[in-house]
Image (cartoon, rainbow, N blue to C red; front, side, top):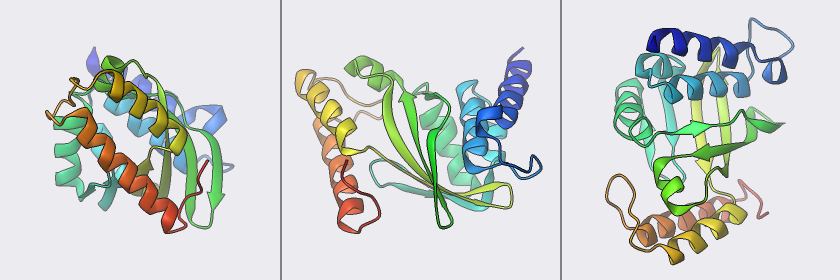
Amino acid sequence: MKAICAILALFIGLFAVEGMAADASKPDAASIINAMDAAVGVGNVDAAVSFFADDGYNISPSGKKTVGKNDLRTLIENVWIPENLQTLPARDVKIQGEHSVFNIDISTTWLSHLGVTPIQAVNIVDIEGNRIKSIVAYWPPSSLEKLTQACDAHPDIKTTSGTPCGDVMRAFKKYTDNLIAQGIIEKD
């Protein structure tokens, strides 16, 4: 049954009309990310990993970079799935050179405990062929503010890895501030 759900989720993600590129044989970044997120959402590690290029990478909202399919498999299997990472379809897609930039609403167990789910993140995605070359995810300042308020209200809530809320918030803010300082993103 899990396999059928995964196949249906992938089918819906790849062929959703809203996210499709003009050429269906070359899905756009949002379609590929939606399909990968659907695979994560149903716990299908193999399917989720298959969306990445062999040397693909993910940079989390804390700035941690995970490179290559083996390490991405570990991230997906040991962090994203246990944390019950769920996303709504990508929206507000903008093409900036080789990058696709879009908003994505995220829910996780940790965010649910904080009472801020779903919350908006931004993904900057590069696609190579029909595989994910890179995902750079970050919390925009408005989401950081909501997360900070939630952490201040619930300082005892830790991430699934056991990191205290305040520590992870400092990493999130430092990373987003660094992206702003580099001119990669704008302050909202």
